[in-house]
Each structure stands twice: as C-alpha cells, then as structure tokens.
Length: 115
Image (cartoon, rainbow, N blue to C red; front, side):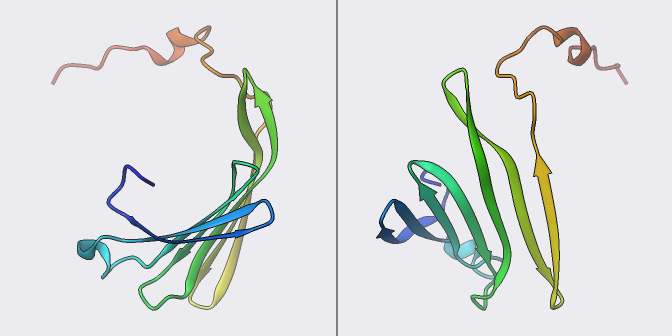
C-alpha cells in the first residue's frame, strides 16, 4: 500500500497481529472508505474494505501459507462480499503452486494479429 495514494492512518498491534488502517486519497473518498490490512507473522492475514459510510463491504482472509522457492503463498483465500444486506461467500484454493515456471511459455507467447 505504500506505493499507492492511500495514506497510513493508524497501526494497532496485538500479540503477533498488526492491523494497519489506510485512508483513500481525497479524490477517491467519494467512492471508497478505509482499507484495513491484517498481518500475522509478517504474512497478509486479511483485508477489510469499507464504503464511504464506514461499513464493511468486503473481507478477505488468506490461509494455509506454504513456502515455494523461499516465498510464502496462501493456499486458500476466503472472501465475503456484502451486497444489499446479503453476504456472498467465495473460497479460492490453490494447489501445485509454481514460481517462475517457464516450461509452458509457448502456450502464452503468441503474436497479436495486426489490424
């Protein structure tokens, strides 16, 4: 978030959990509220998105981290979205995580047709 226009407003620490509150820039305040990030043991644990009224509109939790080539990756992303008073839940799972695998590069490297 440091490289965005959001401003760090508050940091709270409880045991190994650090929660940072980020405020949108003035030009985005009519669209977005604060974003809260939770880090546990230096890994992203969760994100909370708020609307302009300060209500939670979405929460994401990152779980079951594994190490791949020295990097930590979550195997699960649990997400809750709140729309018109309804809660929508989505769970994304990852398996067979590969970092910088170029063995299938020919599948993605193709010429863009000219107009």
